[in-house]
Image (cartoon, rainbow over all chains, first blue to last red):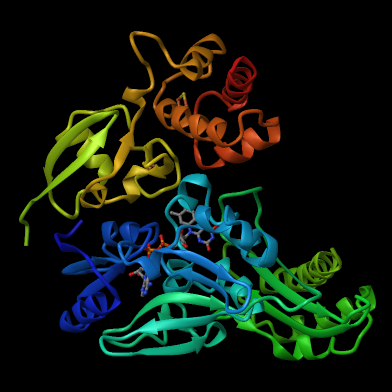
Amino acid sequence: MQPFRYIRAQNAEHAATLLQQQNGRARILAGGTDLIVALRERRIEADLVIDIKGIPEVDDVTFDAHDGLRIGAAAPCYRIYRHADVVRHYPGIIDAASLIGGVQIQGRASLGGNLCNASPAADSIPALIVHSAICDIALPQTRRRVPVEEFCVAPGKTVLGRGEFLASLHLPPPPPGFGAAYLRFIPRNEMDIAVVGVGASVQLDADRRHIVAARIALGAVAPTPLFVPEAGAALLGAVADEAAFVRAAEIAQAAARPITDMRGTAEFRRHLVGVLTRRALAQAVERARK
Amino acid sequence: MKSKVIVATTINDDDVEFLCEPRQSLLEVLRDVLGLTGAKEGCNNGNCGACNVLLDGVLVNSCLVLGVEVEGRTIETVEGLAAGGQLHPLQQKFLEHAALQCGICTPGFLLAAKSLLTHNPDPTEGEVRHWLAGNLCRCTGYDKIVRAVLDAADAG
Ligand SMILES: Cc1cc2nc3c(=O)[nH]c(=O)nc-3n(C[C@H](O)[C@H](O)[C@H](O)COP(=O)(O)OP(=O)(O)OC[C@H]3O[C@@H](n4cnc5c(N)ncnc54)[C@H](O)[C@@H]3O)c2cc1C
Ligand code: FES
Ligand code: FES
């Protein structure tokens, strides 16, 4: 590994100022499960590594029935999926956080790191999209907010500019009758990269029969994780049954732009989008009815 | 740029101070600076679990932690498992079940199994296999390891 300096940032302003001063030669360190590998393989070069885990708002997970969930960008997966309020209200996040890597990766890996690494196959991003997460981005003097579906712009590229880093993710409180799920296909049972991932969320009406809102997002079928608003829109007012799931799945398949690579062919991926969208919707509806 | 940093930490209940470069991983520090060679280097990229340690009680891959990050933290390595000349029950069961051959993977499996039994003292076979999915073994075929962990859980 090339030599670098290491600083544990005191607060968000400190981290953003350091980033800005380094002219692109500084990197943020959260759990390090992508960064340390990339530094070792010299895919990333840095003069300064800024550890953000000592900043309380960046490390905490807090829930408030009124304001919703705030996930510090560096909070590790295990603290997210053991958080009782996340378990109760954010099932898609639980699905994603508990299948990133194995337990030892989950001891360190954060959702902020997963998002900023901006892999098209990153497992948490479709889940964050269907939970309507907003990115709280810190700059030296101020903040800005970006919906998570707009955060990734190309493989490995995000909207973050110089002197900007992700402080936290803000998820609104789930409305009554809400359910969500994230599913992925991998060739083994665990510890693999998604061939396709699908997140779905629904909101059902008071009698839990009709869909009043729905969101669908896809992973590993485009250069960035893909929000498919038209698939959700097609479900509005529909009875939450298999026929409706099939309609939405066909729209999701049409929106996918998969490629063929070592993990699967474009055709297989498109097929998976259909299967997983139907299953994720069915599971989201089942959870909404609980 | 290359200047070293002093880090104070607790390893297996001992207060320890060491000097390291920011680019050195915790695994390199344990093995090369402190002579604690229990944690093994398999892949050096997070895939094999041979380097597993407990960091403030949480299972991590020490090849994916920087040495400078452990200031003020508590680390447990395989060297801390046996106490007062007595093997830890998991170590005992690994021996009884012949759950190791070359032994390279064993320290990582022991710490992963320890963290499993802390969270879930009575796991099913499926839960053991799932929890240990981040640990690779090229020799045993896993079955004996899973039996040893289940037996240790029964005994505990
Ligand atoms: C063995 C193994 C298995 C894995 N399995 C999976 C898997 O199943 N699914 C999956 O999606 N991923 C997987 N990954 C990839 C990785 O673990 C995840 O992407 C993880 O969520 C990254 O989080 P981190 O906290 O470790 O990020 P880091 O490595 O600390 O950071 C990742 C990148 O984002 C930047 N960054 C981090 N936080 C911020 C921030 N707040 N603001 C700005 N930039 C930031 C860093 O500079 C770096 O470039 C795996 C990795 C390994 C090694
Ligand atoms: S050496 Fe750390 S996981 Fe393989
Ligand atoms: S005993 Fe040789 S790798 Fe597991």
